[in-house]
Length: 568
Image 1 (cartoon, rainbow, N blue to C red):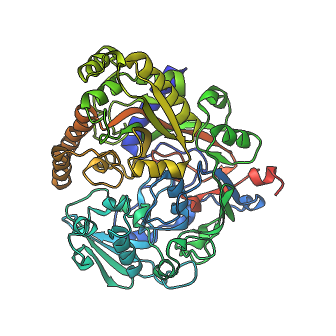
Image 2: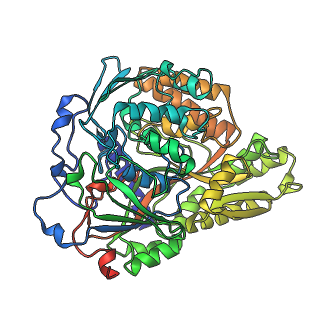
Image 3: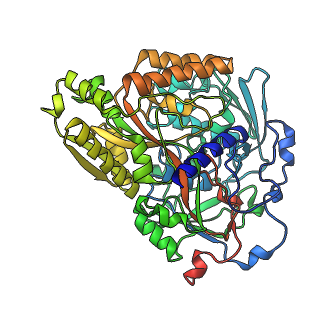
């Protein structure tokens, strides 16, 4: 059955790459899979009601959606957040110039009602919806985007994701402090409802970027008045479909509809409850007992149980599970050691015997599913060569090798995978491994400060292009967090950014990926994720997609939900 599952997922990835979607899981509607305009005033004519079926039957159900957000968010400031638990909340509370279609992930109008793209692909002109307001009723203008992007790029904010704006002309120099004049950055307020953006090179995925958290706007007056406390429920002002109603640490975050959102009439949910459940056994138990409508993962040891439940889903996921290596610390400053540790991991066994849900061994950083990009034929399991390399580095049979610390965040599947890999390292290399478990926020800080030897990590593609998995490893990128850099690697990424021929561009990116995952190995790719979990059949308007992104303004409840079962 598992072989059949992997084969099915592989076929699904091929179809997803071609069609841009992984298919509908819940809530058929006329807009599902529809082809929308790429630019122009015709974007203004989108009929948002087509995302919902006709009829009022749904009104008989309580419109409260309860889900596991997997961890307590480190922050609700979109300018500095980096994790998936934070991003899931950000896309409900804030809104960029664009949003992504809930199924196909095609960019659709967000705060921008429509946009124009110049023939050379360098200039984007965004026209905002008229008379937009913040959640507190303040007028919303193009200046709000300009100021928010200046803040995200400012060296003082030290955003780890500032580099995601580097496709904008002059942005990198401003972020690195080479110029203090933001007027030199290609972001111009034409008038209160028009923002013009100039790129340094054509960027085919730029519209996707404008939906990303780092490019979401923040309310200047609130940020300047309250400082780091501006995201507290009593202070926060936002512009998304929902607004923050309550934040009870270690218990729940609750959102309610934003009455001032420009498209308020389409929102059906009356309340969203996000629970920070970082233990997947607890998460699944709460789902089974009726306390949750959606969980994003099932325990590795209970996959076969979950597969027998009709609520279970598994689909392709544009995400890679890997290990960062701190190359600034001995003995991992030696590439032979890093390569030995990579070759000693039986990735096929990790997928088939530990995880058991259709995950695929990762030979590179870029997962399958990106149209036109071939999979890297990286380093496979080779214990003999692994032992030879470690001996060449001065540690025959692991003798004299210091104890290795392997960092991971609290999560059952990460724990069992790290246990399996540490056992392989002991068996193949003869090294001692000590597991270090951290809560989400502490884990992020340890990686950021290079306070680790080896750390498990995962990366969800921020847009449908290999660059999202490769650019982060350039020198001084905020999410590099390995201490590694390579002039040759950086040059390939720069050349790719300016290459106009699509095939040549992808070839440059694959050369870079080979340096990263075969030659230098500051990271050890382990497996490509699948998107698996449980969702109630009463949850409508929810779709599986390659990036597990779910704008909840399109979701509604039609039938018994978690709140019904809890008697609330």
